[in-house]
Length: 394
Image 1 (spheres, one colour):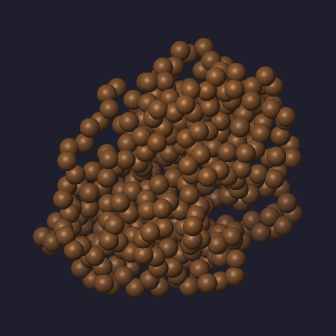
Image 2 (cartoon, rainbow, N blue to C red):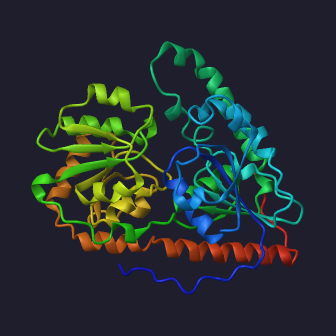
Image 3 (spheres, rainbow, N blue to C red):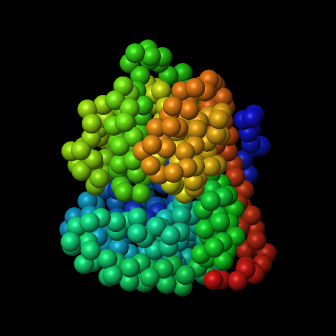
């Protein structure tokens, strides 16, 4: 599969006044990788975000001009930002965006509801329709604690309220861009809108020319936020059944303490690591484990960019980023036994690291920048000619 070489990037109008709206800026994950690329595309932009923890993001994002909402000034906002969810619809509408020609929202929650000024164009890069409002509500409120059991009816009502707000604000977006065909299908299903598909950017050059790690020092790797839907618990139980293999879990989150207490000795929790150390962790991996269902999921592509094959749940975005039998292996049942069987199947494959790297190149950063520039230019041109959206809003 040959790498994609994009044609020269489309020129955008000079002196374009741009607002980038990102839900919150308290972690550095896939959504923030997209934000970093948008900041490269529009270095003159002003970044608006509900809550921000300074110093957490990339140098490029940190160097931008930032505007935060009133929610950012509340106690513990940066550490407990999810508790403020009921305030976010009001907070996102509080941004004054009337001075901008282009509003570019990076949305997985309420950023798409930002109010652009008259005559402005609003392009929404949608990471996912709000998971806890639409198709993943139970994944976010799962658990057996008595308090959670009592709160579950109220949480379902809150999800419906957020769903209603999500639909009511659809006409604020002129053009949707989805991070995957999987997400585009959800946008069609939940919103009744079509979306262009532009996969998130992978900085392949970061993972080139990595040091060679001896086989005796290699390990299996899982990397990401430790939250329930990412299913790190499934990996812990699978590696319990494979005591001769070592699993390193890089990342942090609310699930870490519980998982670490019950993990076998061959599973080691590394925690959050500096951005500059991530490539080194990929370099030492024999395989990368991706046990949860994601709307896209950028980390399997980072692993492949480092020449590391992937064992992934065969659902969601992984179907678009992993080539089964060539750059990795899918498992289809969310059970430890199915994950173990996939690891054993991968061991029998002679996966070529260069095949993994070549596949990841199809998602390289420059391809993202080129495609987004073209979509924004087309959206601006459409508005300038007075064309109106004709799609029905769900």
